[in-house]
Length: 116
Image 1 (tube, rainbow, N blue to C red):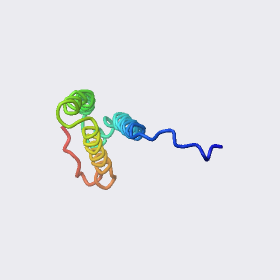
Image 2: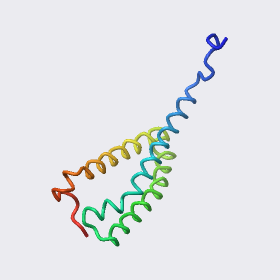
Image 3: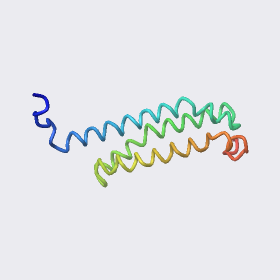
């Protein structure tokens, strides 16, 4: 009986919803993963507690303000799917750069950002 039933979702809407939900899940996991360790990472490479806290606060503020810019782009310029895909790729590149910067060889060779 179950093998002969036709697929329930034939429209593209289901695939689009899955795409958006997966992108949002990846974005949230990435944000909270970076947010927890950013201050400790900056202190590890030589930044003071005050500077590391200020950078983390600035980064958090930018993360909460950029959706306004993204909403403008999605509504007025690019459309929602192109905007989601573009910023998703941008987020992946940023995550990749953070991962490369945290590589132990780079951190021990003092090739990181100079402390403030």
